[in-house]
Length: 186
Image 1 (cartoon, rainbow, N blue to C red):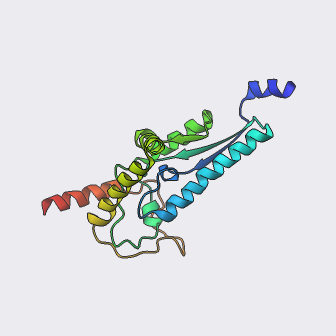
Image 2: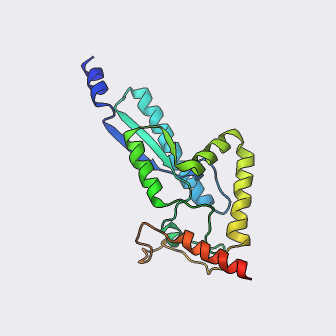
Image 3: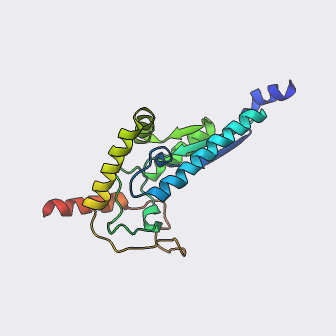
């Protein structure tokens, strides 16, 4: 009885926040290993939430935050053997993800898709999984294979740390705008 009253007064005592991705739910072509690792993060959160529920530990919350593609140095650090420069549609600003993480820590939910693009992809996949995956795959192919400027293969930070990309902002959106403007001139 005293424990229940204390929990009502204090609320969640321990909050674990996992950082997944919309790709936790919607895998995208040419990003299989990333999609698989993010799906594992989502499944871990779901399994932990069930274990917590079964144990009766009401003071623990596990949230998986699932951002849309975000303009961070990720693309500098990731290995790339596609032959094209990394490109993703409608990338979000990193601050949007930071805000979602803070919000999730104050309003625990099992899963938080970030922004309208993340929420739309998450819901669309729940309603129409095959169609959503096909649309995502087609968009990914167009952006990353058909229109991406050529790029040399790189192992990124796979084998050793990199000096470049030690900021929050990745500069990918700006680079893509420049590439698109150059392509339109031709």
